[in-house]
Length: 78
Image (cartoon, rainbow, N blue to C red; front, side):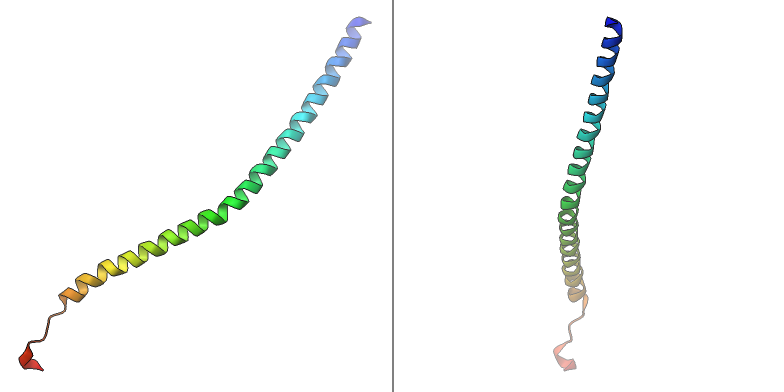
């Protein structure tokens, strides 16, 4: 009889532990999903800002050599 009670107590403890672990994992997954949802817009904004800055820098870097390459008119041509 004593062995049977220990099996029942062990099974109950196992079930409680399994349910507790499932609840804990569900809560953690939900926290991770919420954190990822908050982080995505910030990362997207940072990436867009970085790309816009890179385009602006590239335009200014390309515009300077083009402006310098335009030949100047001699004063007699005017």
